[in-house]
Amino acid sequence: MRPAAADSAKVNPDGARARSIDAAGLFETALSFYASEYVLRIFRGRFSPWARMQAAARKLDALIYAEIAERRASGERGEDILSLLLDAEDEDGNHLSDVQIRDEVMTLLFAGHDTTTSTVSFMFYELARHPPIVERLLAEQDAELSDGRPTAEQMVSGELSQLEMVLDETLRKYPPAWIGPRRAIESFEFEGYTIPERAFVNYCSWASHHLPDVFPEPERFRPERFAPDARAALPKGAYVPFGGGSRTCIGMRFGQLEVRTIATLLLSRYTVSLADGFQLDIRQMPTISPREGLPMIVRERDALTRAPEASAAAA
Image (cartoon, rainbow, N blue to C red; front, side):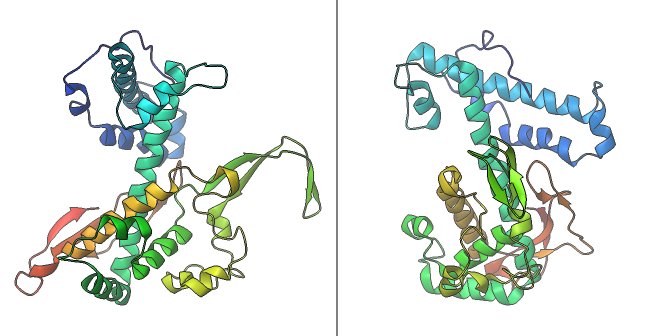
């Protein structure tokens, strides 16, 4: 997906531009390319999955470039990442170009959207299959939350221990960014093979998170794997849903905060169950997620004993 020209971007000071576009929907449209049949991805015709992805990318580009142009023209800044990128400079005083800023913003929008939605989806898929775990989460909420609402401090710190173990186990079994590209700094030996300097090397958290000698019964959903003592005993590098070392995901804390908050509020208000006959099929690229979404039955938690009717919804 390549950027469109920035020259056509027009300043739009009343903010109507951002309200006129469904960025999340466009991302879903673009990402649906990777959920299409593999043979269809080679076509480039007007109605092909590739064409739909490119059309969605052009609309997202128009939004981003217009925001960049408006900020540059007006000098307006706020407490947001776009303002930081516009003002960033290197040791020689050079600023990022429009294309560089576009690429950074697009990456952050993608990384902050698809990974979070897939993690929440997989979490509630597993919770729907494990009622005893849900009971522990609800007991923790009843004991720790005031009027069913978490405090900012509780969400930032991750002090709801049962929820934290469920989140960690979800990320173990379903790490959204399941492949991490790296490059060797220098030549080294690994398992009898010589890896040359500057060779491209990928790690796969999906594979390492399912090693039975590290995580017994890896296909089982067992949050107790991440009780404090058990987590401390894990080998270094065994659990890397956000990567590791100096390249650990810059959005890790924010992503954890998002999932904790969404899960806590949903659990405090609703009970969910899987639709009859649903079979999970996982889309692998570019991040793993339910290929066909996650249809669920949603009931209000406080109304369970009064209203047996359920309404269908999609998480």
